[in-house]
Image (cartoon, rainbow, N blue to C red; front, side, top):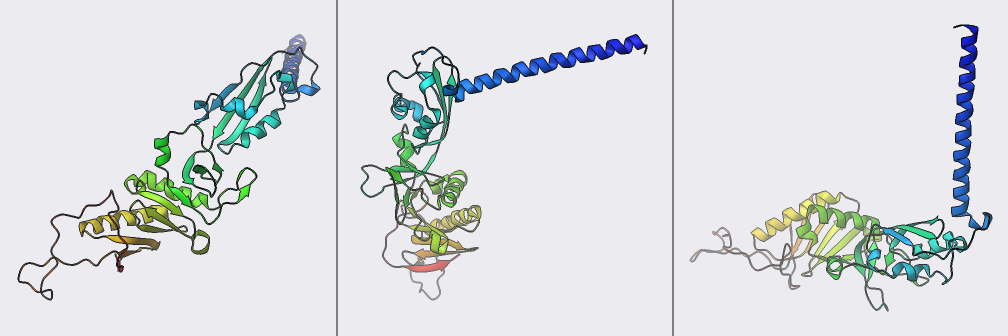
Length: 312
């Protein structure tokens, strides 16, 4: 390349670099001004006061079904302007509602507040002493007053039986141990919904002492799970045990799945073989029942009379 050619190449490179630097500086300056206006309005130059528009609300849950929820929660002054809003204070008001998991607030000039939240999903219900109605419990143990949920959906959630709920201001402290409970309920609902549909009460009374979770069914029977063992295997053992019990027409009050591969079943009554006419109990083999007794889905009708323990 000639000397003149090299000179033109160098000048072209310098002009290109200068242009890129100027554009980058303009972009960075614009970003800084936008951030200052959105997050630090008090430090930005004064602008004309413009009446605040209705907030734009986005959620991944059910709160949007109540059109007044956001207005009640934010409690904005009547003559508020976008410049006068304290975003951190408004965010704290949203997060004080247990149903709200995360909240992001953005000022969109000249007069719009954008609110985007994610909601907690309930996995169970709880009835604290002195409360007028049931509250909901999320997988992280947060207890909250659900808004927007249909009654049919809430009826499918089991109840949580805990030793004590501790007050925390106007609400309650999170329930410890709900992480392992959420895992159990989630796997049961996904892998064996016919069993999960009959679970009504989840007791945490022995979770800290014995690492066991007691499930009481619609019919009053108890199913014991180990919180330290694989839930999938325990649910599979439960399903197999249920099939065997129903095939024998057996009625039970307790199934313990916390002993590894051994499933211990406490019967309501011993299984009595049906003998052909004229045969004695010493020589006859048990005959299968023609029809099984009536039972509720999956778990059967249980009473609390006698108790006989068997192992599968």
